[in-house]
Length: 130
Image 1 (cartoon, rainbow, N blue to C red):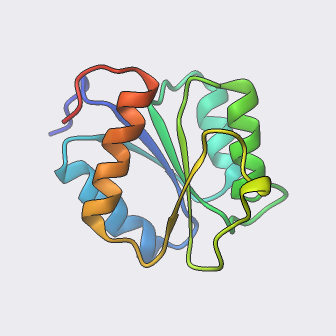
Image 2 (image 1 turned 180 degrees about the vertical axis):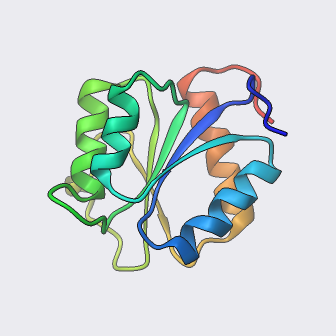
C-alpha cells in the first residue's frame, strides 16, 4: 500500500535491471516513487503537474536529453526540487553539474541511496522524512 503523504521521488533510469532495485529500496524506505525511462518521460511527468520532492537521474539517458541536461532543466524550471545524478561511468566534472546537484557512483550502495534521498527531502522541503 502506498502512503500518499510520503515524500515523492522521481527515478529516471533507462535500465530496468538497475531501476527496479532502486525503486524497491526507496519504497521499502517509505518513499513514494514515480518512474521514467528517459529525460523526456521525466519532464513530461513534471510538466503534467506531478509534484516531486527529489529526482534521481542516470547521466546516460536515451533520447535528445541526457541526465545532465535534465538536471540543468530542473534547476532552472523547478529550482526547489533537489537532483542527484547517478552513473556507472566516470564522475562528471564539477563544472558540468548545475549548482546544488549531487552525484552518486554506480554500483549504488543502497544505504547511501536512501541516505541521499533523505538529504534531498530535507534540502527541498524540510518536512517529514521517512
